[in-house]
Length: 180
Length: 180
Image (cartoon, rainbow over all chains, first blue to last red; front, side, top):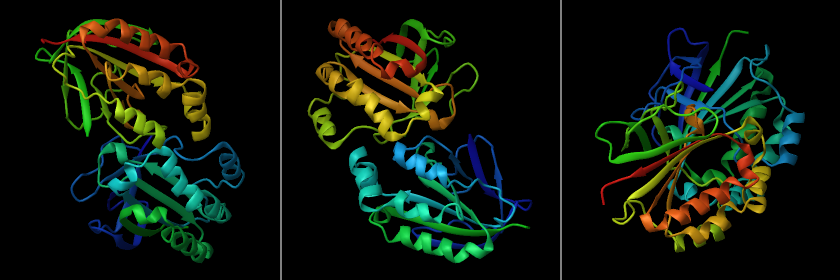
């Protein structure tokens, strides 16, 4: 249930760039190792990152059906490009109630509706980690074929312009590549 | 942020009873120690229990205001009785979407509305632990004065009769007492 991300010489993914989009950067790594170790994430510099593929917090039934219809799994042979984007949201976000967060997330930011057209080209997996007490609240993971790189840039830049993103106070963008 | 519960000779609370309401019991302890250690809960027999006082998952703004108006904090001098009720819900619960869970939780089970009249006599704290990967999904904690014991029994028995509770597949009920 836990997924752990850390720098290691024998990591499956080569890091091609690491950018601190907002807040403190993560210490540089050159290869990323993903494993299913059950461990708590680091509190000081961030590494290792750890998260849990958990139950949905905002998705409603009609959205779940739309997402499932366009779903793409991880590990497709052609998806040799990936992005790992750890995020932390502000205290102001976390003191909002459920209805207020849902309103910003979907009614005002269209997080689900605007992301749907990018499926199945861009496969996604969200890992929750706020309750694990590390430096981040979420680890977002994306996999895509090289031909869909521009499409991925469009998705990310669209999300970053939403009202929801105004609550993001730390964001690091790692791009990765594996052997095809 | 983490709160940890474990059996220890120097625990602040004396265990007066431990009942397996549903599913596997927890190994017997005689005193309970509560601390703020950041550690993962046990996976095999359950101990130690660990959870996080986290952001609200279902509460809406109008409910948050009603709850805040009647709020009682932990540690009141007269509240020498406590209950620790760890709960695990079924896979069927966790695959429901947010709107479906909210509908069962409040519209059909009145989890918030029916509990409100018991505040401030019964002080409550919920700790989330599903994402920590232990044996339970929630640790619920209640504190009250001896004179409110019957009131507490009424609250617990009311919750156990709801539709929401039909998704609970493991529940252990520990009652505790401390020196006044």
